Image (tube, rainbow, N blue to C red; front, side, top):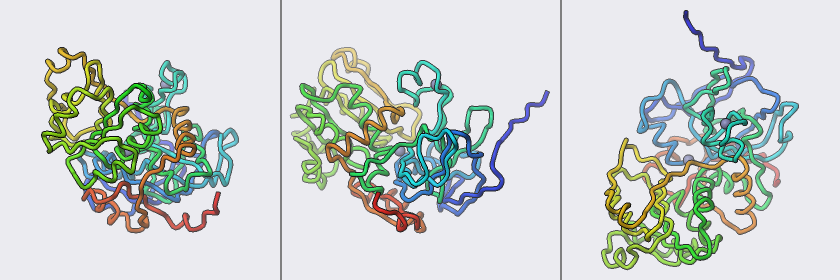
Length: 365
Ligand SMILES: [Zn+2]
Ligand SMILES: [Zn+2]
């Protein structure tokens, strides 16, 4: 028997964005989105951040792509169409991150971990597991159409451009810090001060961790780390500074996806009973970890992937209340290749956010 996979798409509607099939440059690409479901919204994109995961996808670093892929998972825009059961109204400013669907009824979905659901769907390089096999595309585009359940209200205190990086870099760092109890009595380390790390430092400071230690190979980030709320800066190439921080961190977030990172050295920073948390996926299948370091000092290695629905909305409200904001450089989305180049070269301090023509039409919300 031949099984024919149905791909459901709305042939009356066309969205246009910047796509690759695994090699730069990005090229303009148009596609038909899935039909607007009863809970769906269509979002006119005003802003989209550029994350390391976008780069790893669109350069083929995580493997071949099955077809043209529009990346972008730090999406902010205005709702321009809404199904009858949508959670957001026309005209609302919303954000959409990497996660755009889940079954809604498994143990993880019921516990707010929709990102771990076996039926989860990412915003790009994925298909909907609802029988439709519809292919989602990301926010380097004029529009996206997604379930309103995976779109979040942007608090009025946060500008749309600044909101964008919170949808991935923000939630990716907020989730593990909450989960592993960053706060009074805990010493938190952040390895890598970039798009993710500069937000992780701000969250840990806002959670009132006893110490917030920024670890970087670049001394040029010493002063900026302190401005972000770090109580201490360690240049990992400075042996004295490194030794002074040995075995001291209860939680160490590894935000860099450096495939050549020295894992033994990183574990050396972690306190007895402490946890090292992977947040960014290196472009390698395995990393070498010395087991003796784990066994002799009861150290755990953990991973964390974005955040579920409830914690994402909570994170946005926490950012509004505690003045946590990404440091951004805005560039026009019409210049997407230039924006991607700047990101690949590691020049942004700390996030490039692309702006579409629709951004100019935004009323102050
Ligand atoms: Zn991301
Ligand atoms: Zn589920």
